[in-house]
Amino acid sequence: MNDEHGSIEGTVTAVSSDSGHGFTKPNRESVRLLTGLGVEGDAHAGVTVQHRSRVRRDPTQPNLRQVHLLQAELFDEVAAHGHRVAPGDLGENITTAGIDLLELPEGTLLHLGDEAVVRITGLRNPCYQIDRFSKGLLKEVVGRDTEGGPVRKAGVMGVVQQGGVVRPGDPVKAELPTGPHRPLERV
Image 1 (cartoon, rainbow, N blue to C red):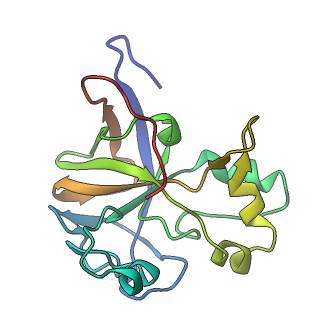
Image 2: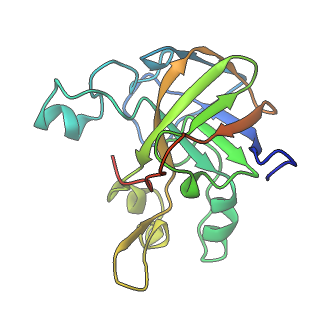
Image 3: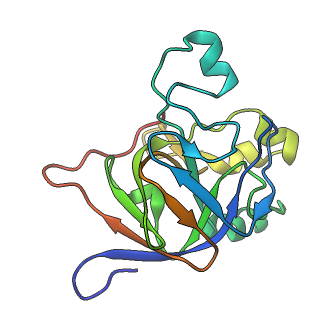
């Protein structure tokens, strides 16, 4: 939602984390974001890549996927096709409502709650594990545009610019980068 000053705002609806590398993440009362690392105690926190497939390729890569954010509006969209998805089910750390995360440009700063700031680095590239969660769901979260290119709807990834505690009900405010905006690509 845009306010009269052009800022883009929404709300945190859920927060999730897991110390293991499972697909879904349990909901929490709060999560603490750590500057330059990610979600405290989450398996994907770290300066370098933590996702298993990326570690196998090159464990020295910078971790551009410290925090996974997903808009709750996706749940209604996939429910219309028979898929029951709730916050944390797709492995996201922060679930939002009222803000179209997928349309924000690369480098957007998301102010979460009183202190935390996450810089969006790109789109989540969903994998076959989504179909293990719910058969056929991958087709719903990766569509095609009119030219046949992929349209990824499984959320955005980011890095923690400023730490802080994030809770359900906290506001989310997007601060767009200056200069020409680059559309999000998969990271």
